[in-house]
Length: 163
Image (tube, rainbow, N blue to C red; front, side, top):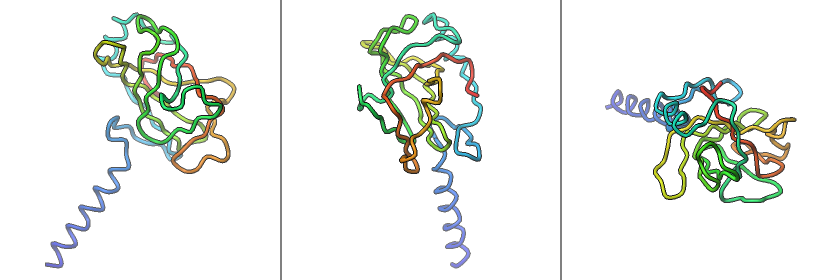
């Protein structure tokens, strides 16, 4: 009986620690909590070619669909829904971008994996949110698992892999 309880407890502990990894993306985390490298799927590469999106193309996005036009935005580790402010290749403004947020490092990392145009199906995508001059840096009052940023917009850039 003791052996079975020990094994059961061990299995529960392993499952609990494994659930801390972003299951939807399967990304390994670096020591500082930022996501490690990740390749774009061939399906996403094909979709981006079809959408006339090329590496380096960019468009402005509202980072969080629930915090439009905020002076400060609070992002949380986990899924995010952003909204295109401008057309992006053949994707029109108001297209939703779905991705993942990591707040573990000094700067927020946002990777987008899907686009959902109005009146259409979701499309695979590889893009990241970026701002120059350290504007994706978390404000000091950010608590663990969150990131407070000045402003609510960034540029979404097409990438061929996540670094």
